[in-house]
Amino acid sequence: MRHVSPAAFVVAAALLVASSTLAFTPVSPSRVSLMRRYAVIGKPDDSPHDKEEFDHALEIMTAFSNRYVKLSNTVYCADHSVTSVVIRGLAEHKVTLGAPLCPCRFYEDKNVEAKDGYWNCPCVPMRERKECHCMLFLTEDNDFAGESQDISIEEVNNLTAN
Image (cartoon, rainbow, N blue to C red):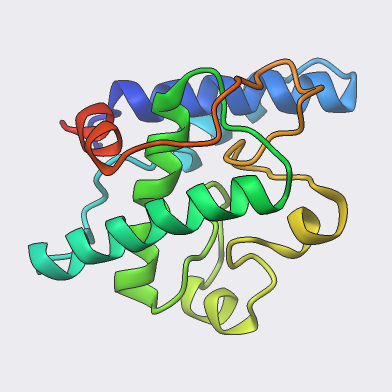
């Protein structure tokens, strides 16, 4: 069993609250278990081995996120650890899959999904309806919305350091 980082647990908890709030239905215990198991983003076993390549991808995904949050007229989560964990997950997928596949979903085959592109960030639901499952890009009426449209690479690194 993998260790669940505090930042990943925050993401899982936020996703649970958001999913139950959006659907207006209680979250079942079995769903909580699934969310805990699949929302762990932290540092997976298959994390990139080339630190330079990963650091570069992290810089790219941080810059992309900062641009897209402004372009889409959205904001980051009030808890920047959520934002940081998602950006780190996008960077890991950029290195391991060649595409910034949404790190907050479970996939039967990540390579197939990355090639398909539907869940590559910004995903189709985000582009069409401003619905970000990861809570990276939030509309201002979202209960978890902060006021920030900017996060530094240093903050991402500090908040996701294990």
